[in-house]
Length: 500
Image (cartoon, rainbow, N blue to C red; front, side, top):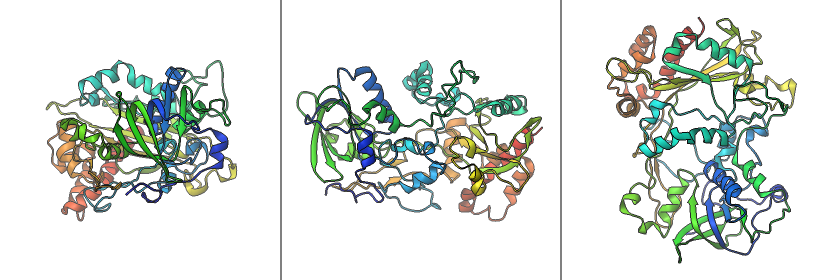
């Protein structure tokens, strides 16, 4: 069996005249490179751009992408459609799973395979890892992150500085509330370039009025490649891009080099490339799949083989709870203002040495106004994104995100012989059992029953209602309702605190 354009359901394999006129793909005859990067998303795209800037005059660098050109930039830089909705239109069936949304193991999303990868669909949020969370990272990784890599990552992705005066006033007000004892309250960093603001969020000497958009690797790589027809035919040093080339196999070659067998998804033709360094950046599912089916896999140490495809990470969040407000304390919230605020848990411990609040909180105000992409002023409130009758109140969404450790039961299983669509086991983030029995004990030291967890997250009246609510004696009902109950209850706590 060989890969073709119908191997993955909903996979887009198409040549684009728009892409051909925008940037030049690799047209050279040479198959040898110094570095080959497989994947053009957040990992591969950022690495390709960085290597091109540092080594492009001496080294031959090739970025291979299995998918096609869909957009030249992030979807938020193109239209107002929600990124998650557009992402679902391009999700590919690269794996299968048993069960459904009601099952204990289930992923509700599918990956996108295209130029720029997930980076053209992501939300652009880059919250910082807190010190207490870093305690669960391997020593070397933690040290590297604390020594400056986290800051460099923010700079690379054009970390935003402020959403304006309203957002700053809200943060200042919330820091005066009791919540500030347990949470560090900040504007949520986003990968949104703001060259007109200083690091303090005030206008710089040079003020650019046009928005520069959400960070994505499609733009990053296009800028490196240069506008067609370009000046580089590809047989010299520099960065080259090649789309619609699916990597079938990675083989050991002579002289400490690797041979890559690729298949053109448009024509079905095979073409081989070789390099001294090969980087797998196809994503958390595609990269282990490629490594497992590659000829070099049997040569890997047994300790490495057993880790391939295991330890997929997740970041469980509660459902959003929405309300409408006109002010937070003395701070007015105009209907046309916007803010995104994060409450980072300080990781403070109680008398039993357990972390009091092992979760962070996201607070979004009029989230549809984050991006200046309203081409038609008359359609500004279409769809009721921020409308609430004629009250003029602003929309506020609150949800909770929970800390996480690597989970080796989240894994990509081996595909059948000559197959490309393996089974994936992944915990359903809507189920409470694993959160209560494994994640909270590992991250926070909690050994609490469901009722004790609810009591920590809820006000007494709500906790009582949850314990006596209809259907709560059924374990499946308990798991299905957990995230919504937690969010609703904690929403009561937060709204009572911030509205004082």
